[in-house]
Length: 358
Image (tube, rainbow, N blue to C red; front, side):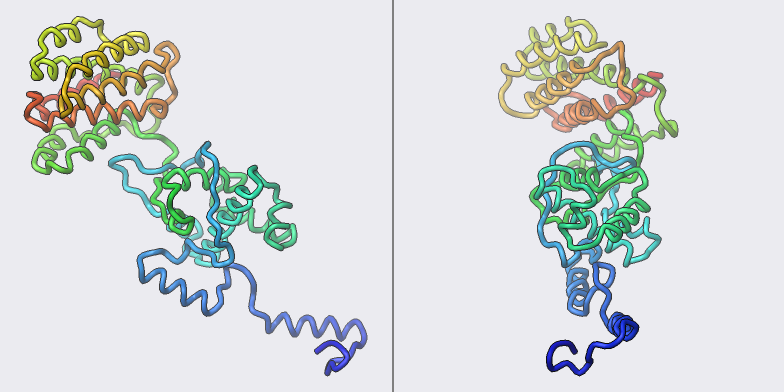
């Protein structure tokens, strides 16, 4: 068309503008929202293998590696007992089923991650435009479409952090299918304790059903009253002290059991710190097995409690959810008859005690 043998010779400016318009009309649109036929075929093959098609933009193959940090507002990874939704399906849902917008937003997230990894810092939008060969206006448009679906986020950084924390060994396309939970609030102590306990009893379905029949509960909607979850966690830690004493009796260590019972009740970080040190000492006297494991979980939960401040409670359960899970895992060890603890009764009594704390 151009050059010394061109069939279309240079002419007035208007003719060139007309030619540009004619060519643009025949040109396939560029970008992840408009896949080519081979890309569409590849997407179909991905779907046939159980990999959602929305989680792969063929123009960016690298897998970004981001540093740990904050996670996005209203999204978190599932905890035991949670039912997550693949992240790419959440993007599609927020795009009101618009596949093109979902694909473009997922591509933008991936491209942003690649650039962040290359620069080892949060990039500017101008750097994104330069890296991916688009003008600044296009970069701004892609950023705005991302923010339409994630209005609390100024960039994909926190979304990438959440996905990568799920499993940093996965390829990035598969990470975009990571199950996540849409929730602005972390679970409460009561819900998390029950959910983790149920999860740990999957290998004993009959026992699990009995326990769940006794402890299934519905909590108040909305945020918990200030400090309630932390107070409940300290109550749970006091239960741990008593379970450890009963486990030591079953292990043939009555003196150690008396020592555990003689400890002051656990109600703050100081009493938790002292109790964890003593429980750790008693743990070393036990052979490997469920009894020792009970004390291991209890000691680790008490260590979490020792990091808190009873006079300045956390606004929610986020800082000590790991401790709650460890307490549930400790009680779940009672599924082994050698601990001589009635798991159903202890689970019921513990939940009732937690419910009573306001």
